[in-house]
Image 1: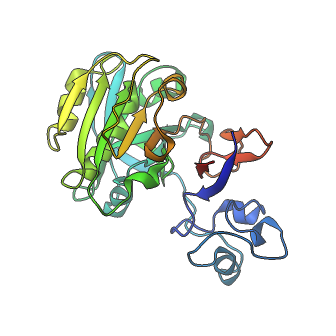
Image 2: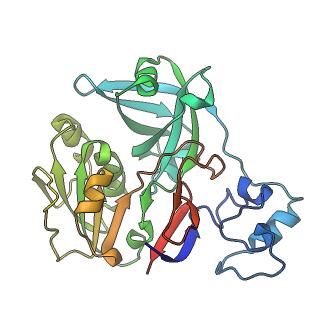
Image 3: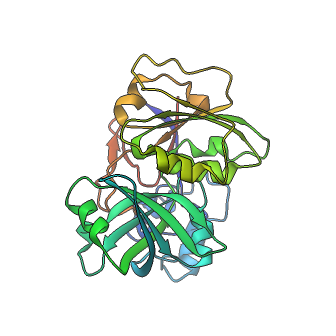
Length: 299
């Protein structure tokens, strides 16, 4: 697989320039990559100029901060929703489709941080809702927490191809979800409510019906169809955008035209800043891409 362009999700945001500028690994800026000339495709404010004018310091580094657990709701034995307190500004940023945060129990090392998609954001209340599938040590630690947790964010790259849903005109959108993929679908639906016409196909395996009912009640979708996903699933053609929020197995096996496809970013996230390399993908030409930040446009 080859690519014609690599875009950084943080470029031009309040978090740019980031840590990659300091290490000479900026995804967008050729000058910050060590080149002598500017040959980037970035059309916003010059990242190199921002970095130099700022005294070669990064902007708004995301750091761990304590957050109060406002509510803990269990849906069955292995799915818990944590409603946590954040600032109104934090919650507003988290309402953007594809938003996620890192969460860990207070006092634990950063290796216990878990990337969690935002399922609902309530800026007016200063709260976000996070659905956690309890699987192993890290998620068990979060589920057992009481009182406070440590949170870091907001991160933006939870959806690949996300520019397809950031249009001014109304669109007809299909969300296909399985398991915890329902969380980013619910966040998108709340963001798009009143603008886009949203239909959902939900695989009921590994997700709780009560959770679906609770998180679609305030912003109901146009239609919901429950079915078991299979590799030979044929995607309907009469949609402007299709969100496929499932495991890599289904991302590979279900065909959706690239110009209409938005999918969950299932790469392994560890730092979220492009530093650790856990999310690195190497394409067919041997080029590495930091998938915690990269949005890819394919040939």
